[in-house]
Image (cartoon, rainbow, N blue to C red; front, side, top):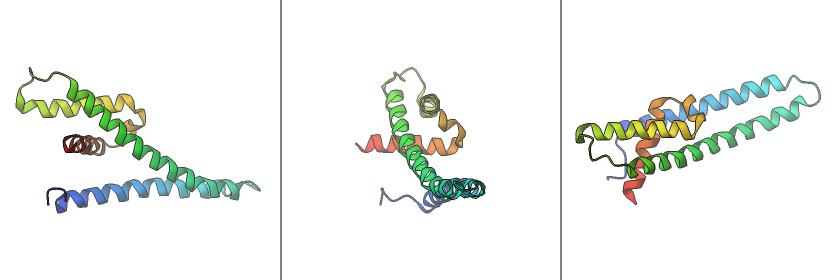
Length: 129
């Protein structure tokens, strides 16, 4: 049962996924509606926009996961022995968050709690290996 998250965490993940999918879907639909008004080429462009947005969403999700993993690895390689134990975890998380934002500028547009979730997931994946 350790690999199954509790109800509240599962609900939070579901809500984040619905919000993220809804925002990109709304942007895609609005862009397609605007482009559709262009004579002759509009319907063709409107048909192309949703798949491109879906690919961007997939790319960003995959890239964010890879960069979060790399940020955690970089932070774990540093020497944290002089940092007091109670503050060490918080400082490591903040260092990984800063590194993630530096490596992936697109991440700066995302909510910080979403980025922290990606970092915590990367830590779980790293400890699982």
